[in-house]
Length: 458
Ligand code: ZN
Image (cartoon, rainbow, N blue to C red; front, side):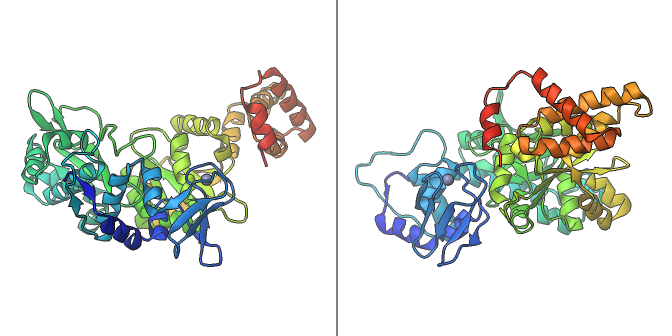
């Protein structure tokens, strides 16, 4: 496959891969008049859309950061590919067959397997695993699904599979399909000890896909008691195509609905994503074996539409228990621009969306999301709830701890409203709460960058 791609073929890729189709796999676009479309720039943080796409002329341009170019430039930049890889990827998706010229016989490819090969290996693996789900050995896997009200059609829709217990089945299959050992290892599917063996053995598997629908890795659940690996879930480890700080399970299915409704629901597990989608909450996604972080927030922001100046809603489903409260507090302490648009959906009995759907049906899952409360209110009421508010000293302590939290909010335009709310919860005068928040912020050492954040807040 060495050699330059023919110029005519590159031109054909430019023509057939529509820039608006390609961009909208990453960014929610709206009509901006004059035949162009706009959305939030995926290359810099912004609050109002300055990222423009012109489908008839085949280019994009951001008036905020100056990024711009054609469809190939866009794919290179957003997926971190070189020119040849970007052309290959677009050619594959738009059905263009690339021909090459062996001019100098040299190999210009970068070292290691190409990204396309890793994507292809994961695609073949997903098909293989999905077929294995129908075999007699996969009985336990099928039972796991049916106990959760997921039938065969649902399993097929989500691409669920089964990794055979025998440790080299996938490796042999991939070798038979022409993949090198290096490619299977770099794709995150095979590991090498004394010999090569499958990373996932005797587990139920969910393919994890990127926004464009390509499988980039797997989440694997323990289903056999004699599984030598104790961990309930295993995930693909970091590869060229799988970055765990960014991947969101279900984003391929949810991205359009997230853009349309300007809302995203973050749940904890693969089965919760499935339950939400089946119940009609088509905006649900989950992180894969890691806590929701700022990188995930940045990915979601690309899809959340900017509507009437509001940034859309991000709803976390937390358990009402201590762990859930801690998770909420962590979310609160993270990217605070994000925190102000963040909501929490708490199920009173502590049921996750999957169990909720089994016990109470689809409507209950929709109700859980509809009954969301703002994150700050949830966190504040947890803090205040620790104290006995019938006692004067309890009220003072609750106010003090609540004020400390409110004073930590970087968006100073929110502080007054939160102080008033805190006063209401504790049962004290708003002026007392405001004074306590001022005292708390004086006790707090100034954070680096806090000044800037405060002055640029809306
Ligand atoms: Zn930009």
